[in-house]
Image (tube, rainbow, N blue to C red; front, side, top):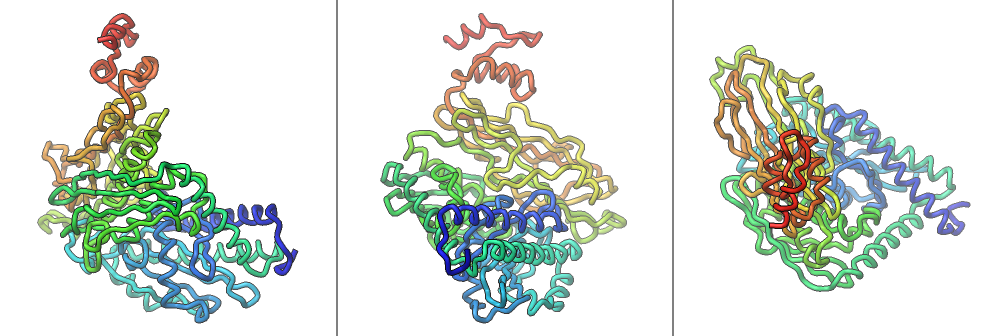
Length: 575
């Protein structure tokens, strides 16, 4: 079988599966060589292979939708500046442009051309979140994107295999964690290199000279499969709105979804305008999480690539919080953008008449903390001798209840990142996690219960204050239940001494005090009184639901010895 011979459907399917294995190894290389906790512990990355036109053919399962789906668009920006004809072997390209990358300065996207026998055959791209990019840090407090850190335009990271040392020195001179950040840049380049080598080996094995036939097969099949599934939905227009906390005032996320034979269009006209603070979302990130929300319900088993993404079209008014234009601050765009699948689910619930999850925490509840001189809003004398540190540790609340299943507890959805073990945070900083456990009764009651949030209590072993950069939502407006299910419990942020903290912005934890992070639970689905008594009893025995909540919300009475009071339960449920 050579590049000139026809390929059978079986051959094409085998090569397609192999291509996915190639990008999965690409992503695994990034995770294994990454320096920052967001990469090596949480898996906040993306990896994929693209054809010469910039169309994504395959993505790694390892990674986050916000990175993958926005990266799928970003390769076109690289090609607009660096056409394929100008690329050479050993070239590597890089940017952290929020509007041409993946939405904020903390993400670097790297693109590498792959050559076989002197001919360019594909492009590999990857993204990861770095622990620091200078500026104000990972906080929504900035009023301008230039306050948020170092900006690297689309440029060469390497030419002919030689790294641009001037760029390395600029990065080192502008970030608080130069070893971690520069190490991650090398990891990004390395993972693309591994992907390229594995692709060339695959092409040698199958004796193909180009990816043209395989790429066309992938994109055609994925697009057709997506349109077939969309065609099963009731055509029409559906609307949903969701109010969330915002920074200084609530924001409204408003979606209009139109389903037709040509695909699904989602328009966010009616959404709140751009914020003065860094919770704004560039359109590339809005597209990413909107498309992910649609695919979760409509076509979850269709591979994610340019073909399947092309039938989901997203628009938002320029100047809205979901289409923020330069120079709007965007550092904490996930706190808004990751809520969009819930908005989309509300539209699809109407279209399908059910069958979608309730709302969940959705946005991450990460522990982002700094310490040491210059990193805390405190008297410099109080910071003398304090250990400088910069921590970003990923943690999550509960997801919404699913049809026929409870929500997932302490699980990141839609981002998909992993919780970072407390031992990792404690090993690289003076922070001590005094408590980390499920938050009883935080999941919304329902026939299917919302997933539980978690409680974390954090202090510093240094005799000094430290700062927490809060990027939280669902405090004033908790996740809503669906079909009679109750709302999840709202989140909260406070000091151990009792003082309340704001859900967003950099704040100081005084010397000797602790910060208490109470993460939201997901909304419930369906009438709680229809939940089987045995499931309620199991929840109580596991400490997920209290006896009081079992009686109040589910109509299940449990005696002092933990046994079910069947007579009282039957009477209460019948009332």
